[in-house]
Image (cartoon, rainbow, N blue to C red; front, top):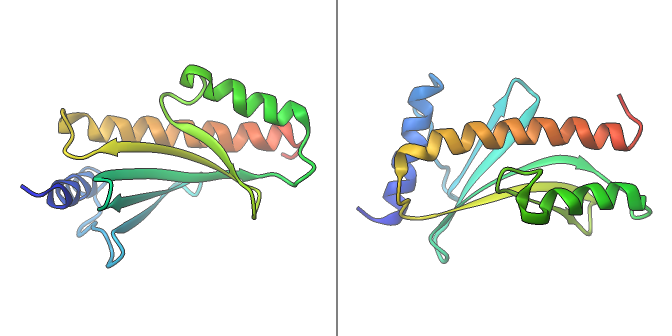
Length: 138
């Protein structure tokens, strides 16, 4: 099975679990899911790297972001202790805080895919709330 076909199969199986008939990549190998409006997760297949990239915007920061916010983000990335294996980063131009996780294809244990996605969604929800707190928002 090609690596893209494996990624497509994983997406289809995820759709079956979530009761989303026909869940699939679009023509750009993207699949976007919203989980109760609290987390919007994009699954993106990178053919050149044979990776399934899972990412979510968990907030925004301004260029004058405080050192306390940056310290929280960096501390969470250290040994992935606050991200369950994902990585937090800031998109310089828009100030988007992105949570990302890459899954090499083929997966050694494809049966773990749905657990990976469930954990990622939970971490994305937590960081969305944490960034709002750090910025003093409710």
